[in-house]
Image 1 (tube, rainbow, N blue to C red):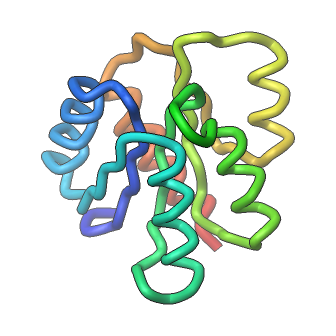
Image 2 (tube, rainbow, N blue to C red):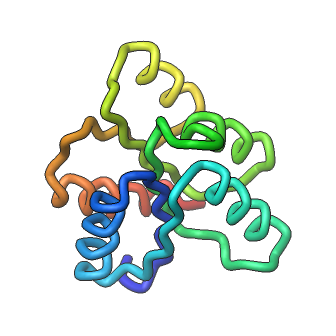
Length: 129
């Protein structure tokens, strides 16, 4: 899945940089945004055709603006097909249930090994329509 476009949404600057670096190292083209509002805006542009739709989205759940779960809900309503990998520092059974109901392909608990992120992104590619 090299050269695939991965959209990363994470409000922690250091973690966002680390995720971008490791995914770039593995051959992914990565665009990073700092919060849920930027993620939502990017995806509206992509769905309208003014930007390329990402092949995979990696999103934190708790961010300023929209949460990762809110954005995922809107994406599914808009019939966006990019698989979504969610990450959270606050894993609960309710969060896992909502993520699964909304179609997230993976949920990683922080702190996570960056190689687990790479594997989740690789596996998410198999969910592409």
